[in-house]
Image (cartoon, rainbow, N blue to C red; front, side):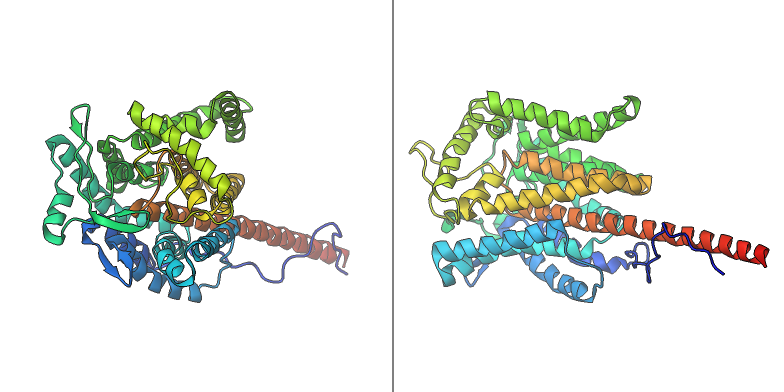
Length: 466
């Protein structure tokens, strides 16, 4: 007669299927590669308009990548929704709804299409293509030549003192169209700006600050990827070449990465210290700065710039921008003119999450930030139960997103930079799902193993008793 241990939980009827890893075909990465190479190889001057919607190279790449990504998603049998996915779905719904409220059904739909492709399409493609850490490593290997190409162009432009790629594209396709409040204002003329005797390089990107953000944002992913040889070296070099944008955002991103690297190396040598304690202490410091500063921590970060005039202007943007959010908290202003003093001539808002609140209402940035933070926290909770190599990559993913969140207080992610940011959030969501499945599968395998040992002991006892 078998003897069962009543305290041992029953084994599941079926082990949860683990996510595919090395057996996943590399062609699954083609849609996300199309998206990224589209903005690397096609400068903004390659734009065209269709039914009132502007299509840049990257936007056409997103549209092309969405079709196979949709097919991959339909065939996918894994659970798709997690915390980040739900936040993304709410955000996209509210963006579309806010434009319908501000502009009406027809015009609101046309104006929302571009943002749906930039935000929604890029996230969807990234989420469908990147399923496991090895998928992300393969993507980093395959995108490295493109990033190195963009970085070398930026270096050549900065050192030579002349813009190279975009003027050449303008000579073929014409100057790109300038826009104000969602309306065309004529041709956009590139401006050369020098800092410390070097030209701020554009490369293939919309603006030097956006190019620097994109390039340096890859640094933690490459460094902690576990890659070796030329993919690692090329990726790190490409990330550092982004500093030729001579933008405060690029240097801030590298400084954050170096600080995180130093802390991560020091933690094993400090008793009873962990990243949770470091994050708690950093949060307390930020809270104190928020309370003692005149206009809050966001405006303290906004002052992190090479130009005092730019810093002053960014502080004013936060001051008057938050007033606009208070006046239109539910659906925002869309592309309508936001209220500000007459001396604030520039229409740009150099703060991504503030702009989301001004344009679509407070719910959009709150939900997006909540989803991102919950995803990062969950990855932080489970990554120590993952093998060391993948644990490092998960840490690098969290670090890359943190860099974007901090830089987003001083920069608005639009164009290709918005695509990269939302793709990174898609990577984060996929790695969170992978880590969750991995931990659950390991737990189930351990449970089955313990039951097998128990059954073996029962059989031995039964044989001895007989």
